[in-house]
Image (cartoon, rainbow, N blue to C red; front, side, top):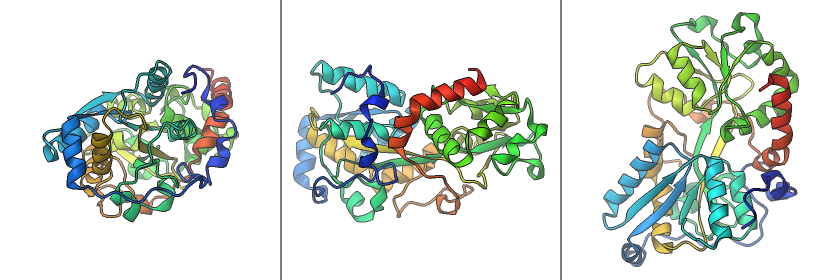
Length: 355
């Protein structure tokens, strides 16, 4: 594994050839292995191993509920959840592998570009769950069978319904530049949040840096995590958020809090969070069983229902009250481009917003 302290921009320079315009579709190096159904022999081998180590950046309550659901189905196999931010997960694995420590079995990251690094370093195990092979769109599964889209979510506009009337709420990113929103907007930082870095890349590509320069004149409240804008909105500290996690807005709204999502007419940034297995997994059979479970209809429905996330599994159903993903105009993700330009994006953003 490469030195985890070097910038991912240098690690990924030239990796754009690995992507065909999406976060997950890679150039074909070898045929993906055939799909692997869950067989009794795999379950028995996994039981002998007894546990699986899952490194993930998904919200801890979601990860824990996923683990409990797996353990309920396979009671002799424990899931050890190691939850941290995506960048910290990436760095931890890099540090472990540089010390010849192979502890991780299955990994999930909210930064799809991590999987480009791991793929090129040759540390991922080819494994295609049956549901992925049969049901997942091609653009959401790696051509070599190394990873697939485990979760999908959006970075969106939203507003506090106690402070803003529906008819007066912004409908687009352009609307956020209206002088009436000056001093009333909260926004997260691409230098801290992987979600916001991805969203910022897509927005500057589609809207231009001029939009950010105009937004900076609105005296926005700058926060760090993509989870922070929904919190500020809920507390009434700001009336509108320019970006932030859609799933946090869902969770708040469904608890009766005064927040409402907005899907910008220009398109909402889309974020991909893949899952993969490490080749030197200490529990390879439990890892395969867990990976297959993660992409099953039941697990995918769980992350929708309890996590506010989106799924590309065609047999899942959207929770009532949420706008279906198919009905939302989204921007286009490009993980390699994000990494190639991340340093420049951070520098320009800091210069514009003085943060």
